[in-house]
Image (cartoon, rainbow, N blue to C red; front, side, top):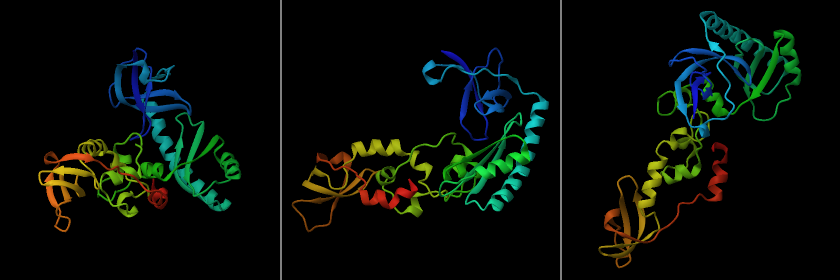
Length: 287
């Protein structure tokens, strides 16, 4: 068991564990820590607690100190400098005629490094741009190419549901989502209906996946062979949430499908939900 405190460096970012030493932190406090990027000021998102060693990567870096009012002034000044750096970088990108979209700029707490985040459809040779920026800022320059999901998380916005992006509101990490999830949930595989503003599969497909997986285990799928009170039949339609099935009975092949609840039938041979290669190829750009 180890004592840790959880620090977050972005408003809705990943929580990183640090050794609190003998300092007691409360949620919302600020602390100065050392990261791979250098000295940073982060907000306490998880108060001191003891967790299993398996949940952390050792050795834990210790907290340097509690952030002082002077430290918070530095953070605010860095935010102002980031806005200025953003405008300067935009002009430099235009001058170098690079095919890239600048998304965000970050100063490390000690001002020793400036990070520029950008998106691009392909690889970008930004070596000359880095030299140009270094001559302006006189500090270490780092350019990072990010994906469209990361861009949405940084910029924020409203989703098709009318609410702020989940990734920008409360999701610390992106959860893996797949086309198979959409198919198992009975959603149309229309890209405009299952993709978010970022153009990738909606993060919310993950929220109810466990419930759907349970229902799929206890509910016959379309094409399954079942035994009903009126005899054997084939499932032709499923309402997964209500548990209602439309079944075409073998003894009445021309009749309209009969409706049963899953509790009233017995499964003989089930079907599997699969995603065809053609479907994967058609939707590969949004997964």
